[in-house]
Image 1 (cartoon, helix red, strand yellow):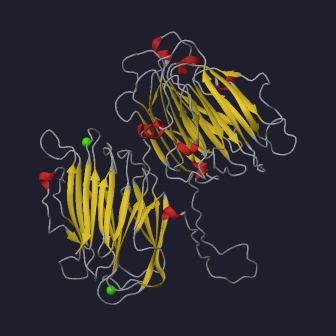
Image 2 (tube, rainbow, N blue to C red; image 1 turned 180 degrees about the vertical axis):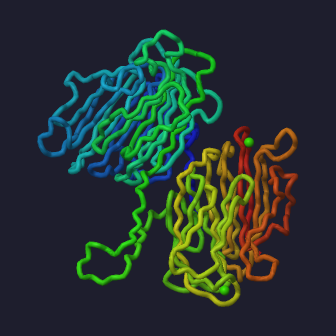
Image 3 (cartoon, rainbow, N blue to C red; image 1 turned 90 degrees about the horizontal axis):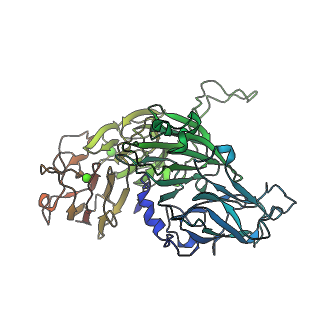
Length: 595
Ligand SMILES: [Ca+2]
Ligand SMILES: [Ca+2]
């Protein structure tokens, strides 16, 4: 059984659940330990950073038991909650590269004020290390209510390396600013703020994107779109240079040595897409709004980021560097992507902008195989599938690809011929099911199938989760979806249950709970689609093993199902949950076993 969770952070509200573990009351004080942060998709070992929302606290780096990679960086954002202006003191500091290092270039703790109220070149900041220590008097101060603390770990750390930073808000007058913050290490993402309607005034929101946790060498492309926010000019009293003093979106890049640099500052309105290429792997997006409650302030912005795509170099000529060599045309070697993008198993979830399935590539498949992989290219609107090789029995054994949308199956393609040189197809969709099936006789070599996301983006889906479960004889799998709480708006999620061995039986499903939003006209506003994997009833060759079980319009409440349901049976069962942009409910619970 394999199971995978998708990115689920596009709306920062989801992260407030995580942050609740850190949040303290306005006057409370708490030590922040990374251990108290719930696991995201990443081991604590590799994660180094957090968002902190409090008026006072202590940041200890590393936290107990934490192992910080030499030379890596850790990033924290601190949002004061009710008062502004920071008082800091550093109660312990052991930050040194070993050599004399007055400019702290080998290792450092850096603190920056993040604000739209001063120009980029005037931002307040501090840099400390052993050879440039904090003031001996203890305290030092920083304006505003938002700071970022960046730790550049030494490449040659000692056991004592690290620091302890205490902070508190010192302004006397409380300020009624609402803060929200989020942290992610996902290498691809979409931030739309607000998800719908107009943003609220008097807020500071940050998104800390630290993809170096996943890959320190990433370069990112960041697209800023749908910019629609208040600019001071609209109120008349400001010069052009001051227009971003009211509401503003700022993109801060953080270098591999922990130096923060403002890359973009935007306000006003634009339908153009602003593209930042080759951004480093770590950045902060900060959105500031002022206290002026002007109706119609704007619908916010959208940010899409992804690894920079290197243009594919297609070698068409003989290799030029091999003198005297008589090799044939160069063979393309496909580097193996990370594990989430790669499968050599019979089925699973692959997520990423590209990936590879190699199934029984060096041997033969068997008769009666059924393998189903779920492929997700997050927030992208098309997927290219390239079959590099396959030794199918023509027509009777094949690879069936189906893309999914809120209506069910969106597009499909069947590869049913042996392949020795790559063939490819592009299908519209952001998620696909890939079914390999072999019939009762005659088999051949396995398959190598690559996928890669196309250029376009799918912005109609904000949330997803894909699960893919292999059910063996005697297993009973009970799934509640979502695990807890309500499902999301604009969600498109998939649940797949495949029988491990179709010669040994089939899977059976009972829907034990179904609570999705019903529209005012009684139709399903949010819907569940069920498909079965079964042999077609038509004469072979058979290239469509998926059949719809639920009505075309989907199902959404218990009156739409029967229990027990003796006909909800197949070699595999596929559930698709598709929700609209508003009103959420509890979701589904199903019990799956074998017969
Ligand atoms: Ca066959
Ligand atoms: Ca809904």
